[in-house]
Length: 495
Image (cartoon, rainbow, N blue to C red; front, side, top):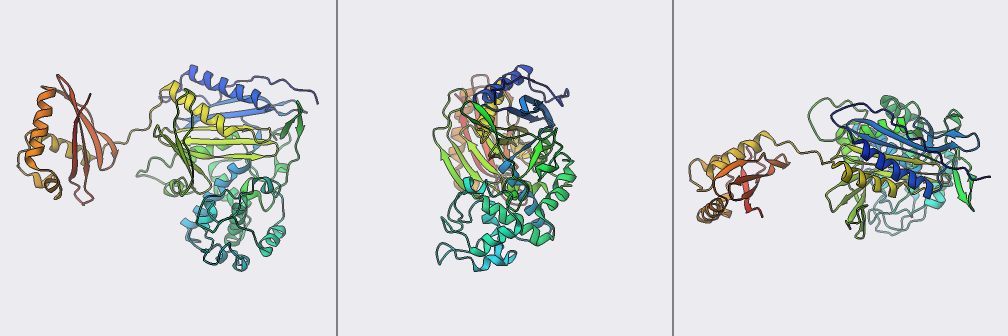
């Protein structure tokens, strides 16, 4: 096969003017990052999307979804997303939990009785639970090379595996180890509970309500002009890879979808934030999505992580329920998942605090889409100067701020029981509070303005008092009483 040259077809789709736009120069910079990645990774085709401001803001695409037919990659082409599929199974399990049809800490053998005969690694091992399977804590060995080739096995073959028994690398609940087998078992568990295949259940209960009409389990169901073909780069040429049909292991990585469709799913997850009052009409509760996105099982600490500006920034990673979670030294929390199968590599990440998501699909074997999404994310945040969503100050924080200011700097005794918790003046002596605050207020001089409170949460915040000669930062936190009162106070002069 001759080497095809990548063609650049940058298109700005679904872009509508809004208060939450990204600068065109930033979009162009991100375009160049993905284009360079496509060329370096020998990706025949690449599609990526930026989700921001409550919509799919931008789609970029390069090359071909089908080399033989010279069909261009774009936002409507359907790519296999491999292990990005796992979170759909997680959503299905959470829906069943919310409906009272299972509990996360139930033994899996309650629903798959064939597992009752399973011998675990040690005699003191606990029973494998649904939570263990969802968070890669069941004790199964990492099985990516082997699992990738099991995608199309039948339900009978899966049952034969179960009946023969599995081998374990760890006792359940001890540590993280990535397992495709765990999600194959969850797929079968869904069928045993609902009476329909996990494929049918996910399609009916998740994809259809989200309007995902170009998302599939079986590649043969995808219109031929929409299906992205997978390739491997071998000795300076692309080699077409065989596509596996839908099967019992498909729950771990069988989904095929388009950028247009998958962005709806990313928006569904982003919409879970922040926690709030108001209509919650699913298809799964916002609280359950946030629960999925929680770091349930610690994975790793990368102390040598480096971002695009060359700055070192350690990052810690954990696993939720079908989702990866990470948090870096800049305070940024990222949630998503990668995917890799022969012929494909993909990744999606979202930053709930920023309302931002990035999605990348490639049709070359195990393309490093995770790394490029992380690079694009950092460049996008830095270049556009994006800021995390501010926590709104609650009415009680605003009230206590006003009352606290009335006590400063002299700490008079009037009606302080209504403002301060009963521990406050046991932990802080009046004369020391008075001396410290009077000195600081003298140093900063006449007060010129007081900033709005910056809330950390519903009951904690900081504000700054600016004087003619300097400023002081004031932090306070409230008690858990029905009428929350100030339990802690700190004041510091700003440099």
